[in-house]
Structure formats: structure tokens, C-alpha cells
Length: 555
Image 1 (cartoon, rainbow, N blue to C red):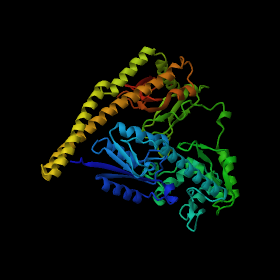
Image 2 (cartoon, one colour):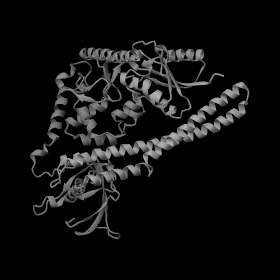
Image 3 (cartoon, rainbow, N blue to C red):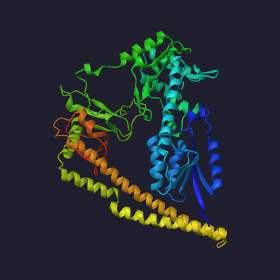
Image 4 (cartoon, rainbow, N blue to C red):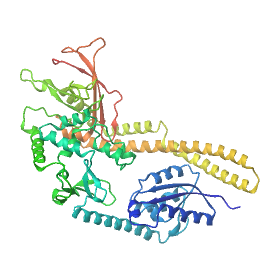
């Protein structure tokens, strides 16, 4: 009796291949695979599709979903039309086809390339290499096309806020009837001397939809991840970005950044001399006079704080935040009898009543107290011996594993996987018995359902155990990385911004907690204040983040 062959099918097509008229459309891939399965007696259980995703990396929703299903061990065969459908990155494609799938008991077949993971594949290295070459060649062709468009002054990018693509010529911009007046209003207000924050407040008060939200709702050009970043509120950075963009003068400026490499996602900014600038390519929304006036106002409002010796300069900029509303904490305070530092505070930026998002529980802490707390905690780390650091790592590793040792967890995984193999064999035998008439359909369904439920429970347990092992390994690596920084430091006498940023990612400060029955703090009223320090690599590790501070200055 021939064993029942169950398989998953993976289909992929990139946007570039679709534009180039590739014959490997999703439908053509599906037809080719189904014909193969019919000839070889393979039953397709499920299809996983990534339509419009590059083969240059494996961060694809359909592929990742298939990996999650494969973990259940219910199906142990995967088919693609050819190796390029799996991916075009030589290193990662080879890893999945020749290492990951075989090591996890998955039989992988690429039909048109005659690749079978259970056989010798002599030509595989050349096939992977050629797919990688194709990826690079396609990328080069697309880049050349885009560069040619940029040099010709064609707008080869998403239209900026205020513009839309001309329906008769997609390479040209035309004013967007809905948003062009908003851009013109922003420039007019800025030319009259209104600050970017004031403009931002007016736009929010008038409930004008900000650029990213507008694109999400009216152009449909964003996926779920991008749409999640869209906010209903304007911010002054967006307003400033609009006011500095020369596209509103009617000029095309493209190529302001580039990827660091073909397969990297990170981009780097380019010098203006490397941009593609073409003058007068579309109708301007503002005149040169208005644009110049705005630039002068922006420059005038940008205070050069370095020139002012009396300005308090906090070393915690971009690090300290109010725990209640999440806004940054800024320097505040007064001068009394020539004393500046004694009356220097960090306070929530939304503390003032005039703030449009006034914080109901704003944080406020004396700057010198804050310095002392952070310095003390960093010095406690620096004073640790190697033995004490190793002991801390052992403790956090044990906590991450829930008190279970790694060897015990791996032993449990092996036992469960052995049982999973038995379940797979039992299900296969049940199907064979059903085909031969030894058991009826009703009994088959009942028994398979019971075994499936046990298999799902086992898969969840395996995933849980693997997660605990991985978490323990990750937390160990994180602590080792943090302690590497610690070992390079010496006792801190004066805390600086560089030291803070070396060790700390973020600090959250809560409002003061006064003694019970106290509503107004006197000159020496003690209070408690929660300060959470998120260190690099290891995050917040404080078991008791509430510090008691003795207040001895005038309120």
C-alpha cells in the first residue's frame, strides 16, 4: 500500500517580475504544481502565497506562515515551481533548501529545477548562484530605469502631500485639490511669522488630516504595518519638513538617499550634489518670495543655544520621559539669589496649563537629585566583580527558563518529538486502513481528530520549551553585551551625556508621591518618586524602582 503524500505549496511573485511580464505568474505556478501532484499522487493540503514580494529576503508573510504550519509536523513536504520561487538570495535560499528543510524532516521539491532535498543535487550551487545573479541584474535594471526617469525630471516616487500623479502622465505631478490648499495655508502662516508649533496646533484644532493618515485613507498605498504608524495629529516636524521642501516651488528633487547595499533595508542620506534636481517640472504651490520668507523665519526661530551661557543644558535630552504621558522632560526652574543649579528641574513638557495635551500627572524632579541617582546606579554596576556579573547572568538565565535547566528542556523536546513522530505514523496508517476498508470514515475522522488535538498540544509545548531556551540564550547574550560596556568603564565622578547614552536607552519618571494626608509639599517634605531606567541590551531590571528623595529646597 502506497503511503499518503501530503504537501504544502508555496507560490511567490515579485512586483518587478510582474512588471517585466514574467511567465511565472501565481496562476501559472499553481497550474504547474497541481499537474505535478496529480502525476505523483500528492495531495495538496494548503497553499501559501506571497504576491508582490521580492525574493531578495525571506521576511514575507506567506513564507513565515508556512514555517509556522511546518512546526506542527502535520505535513512534511513543500513544493515550489522552481528554486527562484523559494527565493533569489543565494545564501538564504541554499540554507532553507539544503539545511533547514532536511534537518527538520521536510521533503522539499522545486519542480522545474529538478531539485529534490532527498536526492543529490549536483547543480544546486549553480542554480542558487544564477538566481542571485538574476536578482542583482533585475535590481540594476530597475535602478537604471529609475535613474533615467530622475535625470529626465520624471517624478519616480510617491507624490508629496499637496500633489497627485497626473492621470494622463504618471511621471508628472499636478496639485491635489484636497491637500494643495492646506500646503498653501501652511506656507502663508509661516511667512507671516507663525511658528511651526503654532501652525501644528491650528491644523489639529481644525481637524485637518495629516499627510501619512491621508495617504493611508485615500491612496491605499500602505500595508498594515505602515498604516499602523499613521497618526490623527499633526506634529511640528511634519510641518517643518513641508516648509523646507523645494518641490512646492515646482521643482523635482529625487535621489536624496540610497540603500547601503542591494539586500540591506537601511538607507543613508546623500549630499545635495548627488541629488537629481530638475527645475520647473510641475505647477508650483508657492512663490519663490513666500518660500524665501519662510526660510528666513525658520532660521530666525532656530535659537543657537550654545551662545547663551545662562541656558541650562540637560544631559538627558532624548533619554528622560514623563511616565504618565510619554512626552520628553525638559529643563525648568528659576534663579534665586544667584543660585541656578539649586533650582534646576527636569519636568514633563506637557506640565504647563497652556499645553494642548496638558498632563494630569506630570513628572518633575530636581536635576541634581536625578544626576545623583543615575550616577549612583551606574557606579554600582561598575563596581561589580567578574564573579558577581557571572552570578547575575546565571540568575537571569534561570528566571528566563522558569527554573528549568536547558538540558531538561531539550530532553523534554526530544521526547515530545518522538511522540509526534508516532502520531504522524498512526495517522498515516489510519488513512491506509480507511482506504483498504479496515476502518470506516466516521471512525477515521474521530481517531484522527483525537490525534490532531494531541499533536497540537504537543506542538504548543515544544514551541513553549524552545521559546524558553531561546529567551534564556537571548537574555544571557544581552547581559554579556551590557557587562562588556561596564568592564570598559571606570568609576564615574562627573556624569556626561556620552556616558548616559553609552549605558541607557530611556528613563521614565513618574509624578511625586507625597506622604499620606499631605497635599502641599513644604521645603523639607520627603516624597517618593518612581524612576524606571531602561539600560542598553537589558532594559528595565529594577525590582524596586521607587526611590525616596529628601526635598530640601524651596518649592
